[in-house]
Amino acid sequence: MKKSIDYNTIEKNIREILIALGDNPEREGIKETPGRVARMFGEVFEGMLYTNEEIASMFSKSFEDGFSVNNNNDIVIVRDIEVFSFCEHHLALMYDMKVTVAYIPDGKILGLSKIARISDMAAKRLQLQERIGNDIAEIMALASGSRDIAVFIEANHSCMTMRGIRKPSAKTMTSCLRGRFNDDESFQNRLFMLLKQN
Image 1 (tube, rainbow, N blue to C red):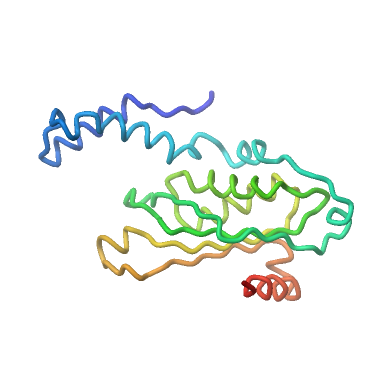
Image 2: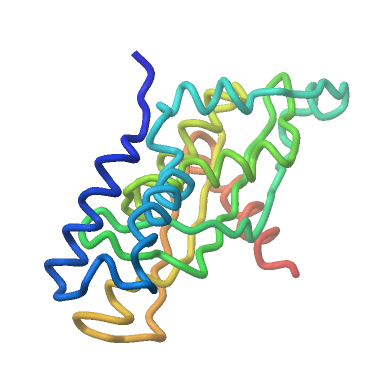
C-alpha cells in the first residue's frame, strides 16, 4: 500500500504542541498555523513517501550518446546542488546544504536535472547527512546503471548552530565514494583535481 502523509494528525498534534508551549491556538496569529505546518511537512518530507528504488524509477530517464556511452572513463560532475533536510535527532534544519554528485556513465547518461531531483528527494526525509550521501549514491546507481558514484555534501546543522554547543560557523562535510572512485587511485585523483577547479 502506498504511503501517505496524515495531514489531520499532524495538524492536531501541532495544535497540542502550541498549547504545551503555553500559547493559545485560537490566537489570531497562529490559529491557522497547525494547518500550515501540516502542509509544509507534506512538502519538506515528500521523500519519505518513496523508497530509493521508487525515486530511481521516477528519475531514470536517460540519453544515449555514443561517445559518452562507449568511453566509460568520462566523469560527469554536478556541483553545488542546493538542498535542505531535517535532522532525525532533533527535527532541526540542515541548511546551506550543497551536494556535489559525480558518476561515470555506463551505457547511458542521466539528464542533469534528474541528478538534482534525486538529491532533492533523498534530502526530503528525516535524515542524517551521512545517510543522505549514501541514499543519493544508491539511487544514482539504480537510475544510471553505473557503480562509479561519488557524493560530497557540506551543510550547517541548526542542532549545532542554534542550540547545544551553538557554534554558528561549524560546517559538516561528508563523502560517499563507490566503485572506481573508492578503489582506483587514478580515478580518485582525477575526481579531486576536477573538484578543485572553479
